[in-house]
Structures are given as structure tokens and as C-alpha cells.
Length: 158
Image 1 (cartoon, helix red, strand yellow):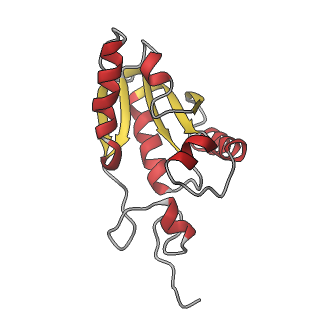
Image 2: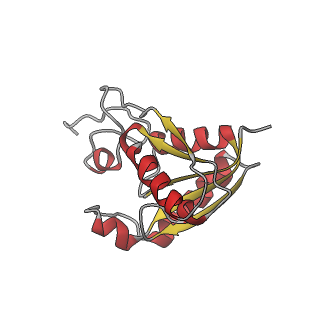
């Protein structure tokens, strides 16, 4: 029996890496169902992100990865046009899974939920998965060929 019936989490998932998988695993470890907010191209652009993949491709890649790594789970992917998507409106959401980097989002979310007379969610902060050099794994670092999706350092002398 899982701790929660429904949890939410979100991300851009441009290049799915070990950090994303750590967050997803944590969400599926504690809940029967996970709502995953997938950042829209417009929101990503507004946040200054330079995407490799458009929304449809990121949705496809994320779905394939979820079905492969978490075959017996229940999940729903929602397009995020703002920071919180369904987590603000969905009464049944009991927890928000965040990284160290995004943990402040939980405080904002609970404020928004209170305004809508919804119960607060528990904030589950998952420590960042670090690359071999002790720095965080990020899509930017992967795009810059500093590390691979597992966090292994790539030689700049290629």
C-alpha cells in the first residue's frame, strides 16, 4: 500500500536524465498514481529555456520512458502552461514531489490551493542526483557535452 493515492510533479524533460529518473522513482515509490506536469514550449521559452525537442517529442519520449521503467504504474501527463497545472485544482493531490532546487514551489502551491479552499499538499523534497564531479545533473550540462545522461563526465578533448 502506497503512502499517497495521488502525487504531482513536473518538469521540462527535454533530455531525460538520471536526475529526472530519480524524481520519477521517488514519486512512484510513494504513490499509486502520479500526475506529471510537462512544461509547454511556451512556458519553457518564457523561463528562458532553449529546447532541443518540441512538446510532442518530449511527451512521446517521456511516455516511452515511463512505460519502460515503470510498467505497472498509473500516471497522467498534463501540459503545463503555468508552474502548477492540475496540482492547483485537483482536490485529490496529496503531495508534490520536488527537487532541492524547486522545493519553494511547494510553498507557493499550498498558498494557491488555500485560496481555492483545497487542502495543502505534503512537499516531498528529493535530493538532487549529482554527476561524478559533485555538481548537479542538468539538461544544460548534457547539451554542453560536460556530462552524459547518467552524470558521467565527458572529456572535452574529443
